[in-house]
Amino acid sequence: MTQSPAILWFRRDLRVADHPALTAAIDSGAPVLCLYIDHEFAGRPRGGASEWWLHHSLKSLESDLEKCGAKLHILRGNPEVLIPSIVQDIKAGAVHWSRRYDGDSIELDKAIKSTLKDDGIDVHSHPGSLLREPWEIKTGSDTYYKVFTPYWKACLKAGGIEDALPAPKSIDGWNGNLKGSLPIDDLGLLPTDPDWAGGFDGPWTPGSAGAHERLASFLDGHVQHYDEQRNVAANEDGTSGLSPHLAFGEISPREVWHETRNNSEVYDVYLSEIGWREFSYVLLYHNPKLGSENFKPAFDNFKWDNNKTKLRAWQRGQTGYPFVDAGMRQLWATGWMHNRVRMVAASFLIKHLLIDWRRGEEWFWDTLVDADPASNAASWQWVAGSGADASPYFRIFNPFTQGEKFDPEGEYVKRWVPELAKMPKKYIHRPWDAPTDVLVRAGVKLGGNYPKPIVEHKAAREEALGRYKASRE
Image (cartoon, rainbow, N blue to C red):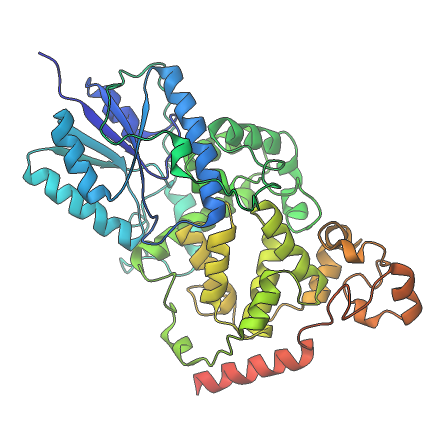
């Protein structure tokens, strides 16, 4: 008697190695229908940059599955309707998926699970996106951690990160014709008019192979200097560049953890960045509105300007502050921004332009290839001062001294703000201080081919601190 098929529903876990849900489906002995459903992510439409990445990531997954003997079936629509329908059509006996931790996805999964169980279908949710589930590590008072350092120390003390599962050598794939199945190209994920993602191809290779190549390159030497080099904006090798691969689940945190610990003696600082991702998911799991509501309700009283003209200038990299502008242009050109510059650019939006952190989070969601519901929300709230374990609001990054410290030669600015390419490094981060003859020789006309500062730093800082004080009173 032929065993009923099992459905493996891929979501943000687009890989075949170290995939507990896939392994369980294979081990059941049933033919496995490998399924992806094009649907909104974390309760909101995907950003444009994420769609570009998703297209290429699905192509990579499709190829990896074909090598194992399975076909990737792709549908578009509401999973709450589609999953029970597919189960009925192919007479599936079980459905497997990797857990998700944002509130909207949790509720969706609960609803699907309830419907399937009522119909007598086995439903199995598996870990696979984190080193530890968000409810595992607790404080002495049996609550979740709200401060990163003690959380990460507790994680390290707990030890016992399980080994990564090997990729399957073969899959008994269900390769029939699934009603409504689409080729990847028909999802229309790539921009066409205009093709604003033309600069994405150079720095990125989406998919599991690209993820492992990037990790291997990083561990081959760059990790040895990670602590000193990770904040140098112009150093493209100073960070691992794994964030989009992790965001789409093309490589698992367990794989990163064990590869790093096995191949480097200098890993603590780098792995703490993986820890911040874990902590962000703890916060999101316990606070489903983390991306839309202040973690600290006191910030609900803060008076924002939300000036649309200033927001647009920030988005376009036209603030007149070179370090900020370089970051925003790097983001638009490549779908990614150096982490140090992210903090400075975010602080500038919130504390210089007095624009609600949620407007910045929305822009990053749309433009980052590594847009992630937990890291995005937790990091923006950290900068704003409204989050758990947040940077205090009165810590206001100085946009030009940050540039001088982390881009001392001006290489980063000159690459992304070519109008300033001929400025001497003495003035590259504050061109408004340059004498007229220096500006002329550099071909820079402030207010012409490069904007004057959109706000004055000292005045903006004092205004922000005044409003912070007023909101607390």
